[in-house]
Image 1: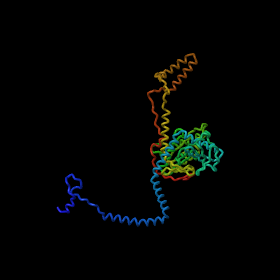
Image 2: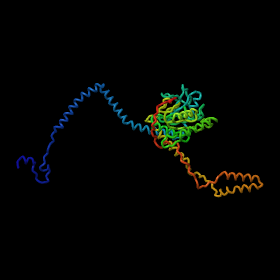
Image 3: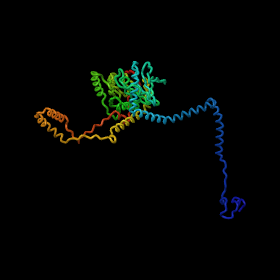
Length: 466
């Protein structure tokens, strides 16, 4: 063995278990790669070239401070853009909960009516002043008033210092001091407040009976259909003070009445009431239901008849689409934002559908609780039915003949009364019962989503001519 080979094998070992590197192993050290060295050199050169170029661009932008501000602003806008869908969803859910609490509480509707009636009573000496909208928020309420000029509010009302439509404000703790609801001077209809959406943290309500009686919903086809159905469902709830008639075409799952037939019956009823005391006026208790017609895309002649009925105070009309005549126009876009500049309204109506559906479910649960028997309450016993009642009806002529022959006039009179009662009441079998027919009401309009219609509309307000 040569000395070079012996040196490569390493020192000799005394046995197989001696420690050290394996027999015949070679230790190799890494050498720098030429391609890696080239990449590092190129990166350093590029970095050295970018530093002066970057300094030149920053100086042209106004210095390091302005550059940092610009970068921070762009990062803030990017973060807001990516977080806007989440914030929109949270805002929508918050609006649904707030509107559902307002609509599900029976005291909420009474509070809105009391605010409208209290403001109307305070404006009795101001000709032409009409309260038409209410904004309720935690701890405070405001009533929007159409008047020129707006008079000073009496106690407990307070003037509003915030910019926007003219209104009176009131702490909710002072709402009990307002007078009870009474008929307005010269008014034909009772207030019909309905929620139309959310404005910041406030629930916005509109009195449909405070204006011309003709309210049109315009704008995006799908959004205005949802808004119209939500308004109709609110009016069809118990205690709303309205008698709702929904025509065909409003909801695809609701076969409503034909508009021509409904107009004919309303015109006949209006003529009959004009001969007596007039249609839709307050009675002594102030609880007369107001007829409300909900229709979609009426023709020119139908729109003229609706305008005549609304102008006479006989009905309140909710119309899907634009019509000719003096009306209030609610313009809604695809995102659910509803505006009415002439009324000073700007609200988000997107949460309204879910809130109205929750309120209707709460009404049904409340009705079931009230109809269910309470624990420990005595059950009402049904009167026993006599099986011989048909036999008594057959023998009633014989009984009458025998009683006429008696001399006591009192006994004869009593027998005749018994016979008349038996003849007026037909026999009823307790085994045969007829189930009531199932009817569909306007509150079921939210069962299915609305479908878009093809007819186009345009924003309008005031008096319009086709």
